[in-house]
Amino acid sequence: MPLKIFLSSTLRKYVPDYDPTRGVSFIVDGEITVTDIFEQMNIPADKIKIIMINGKSKSPDHVLKGDERVGLFPPVGGG
Image (cartoon, rainbow, N blue to C red; front, side):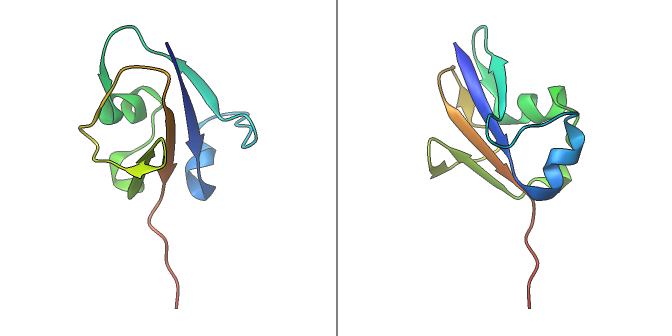
């Protein structure tokens, strides 16, 4: 089952030719954690602050089974 991965702002630079309207399709064969996803996408774990799975906040060790929508967000600064 495919996952749909969406990257926010500065995380997009880690995926060549990333299209924010389409995200990245990622085929899952069995179970995989969110950490496995960013390792396979070569995104440093310390660059990801917020993980949303189907609109709900999850941890990096959350197990994905396919057919989920994954949003990854960097730390946000402001003032």
